[in-house]
Image 1 (cartoon, helix red, strand yellow):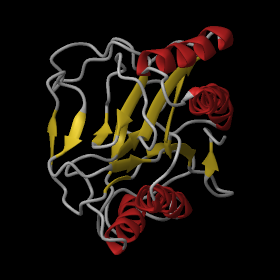
Image 2: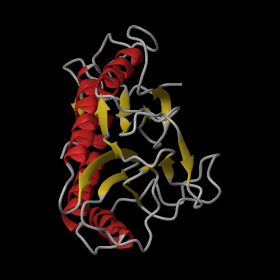
Image 3: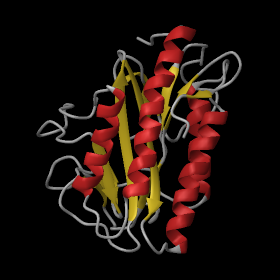
Image 4: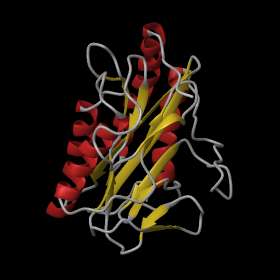
Length: 255
């Protein structure tokens, strides 16, 4: 069932989304050669504490997971697509880093992700990240009252496929509100004009993921959480929490 949020609830979700935005900005600024992924998780944790917010990631355990998620931040490096578990790995020059973060404040959840390169970037990595961001922007542009979920999916998929990149099979965005994952699902590829019609008060986490090698296949790392590309190529991830409103899409996690 899809819950339509009131305008007051959307305003409250914006406050949660701004905690997410501040945390992602702080983590990106802290990410440098030699910094460990655990140190980045602590930066994100500090933003939560300062805001009086909690983490919807910490302790989360969906059906596929062997253990509860042990951190507040997902950090996926190079060939890791999503759900990377922060550990002792220290960032190296040229690493492509995707960070995904959520916050719960006042009973409402925000969720967002971005990708960037530490140190000296490869041109191919910059193109990959730029494509993920363009796909996100296209998906948000399609998130208007009267359109359908398939219009968002098609907008995202057209950008990603047009650039020659893969789209991880079966993964995409989702509804969000009092829980991190709500109905409806938001695929990263689909046919326009299909699926649920968008209405004022729907709130979606729109999140394209792209794989440089052009394949859609992935596998789970030994930790059971981190998803990695099968061909070893790099991946990028971009995400915003977006409210569907009569006046157009409102990005609740805007940085």
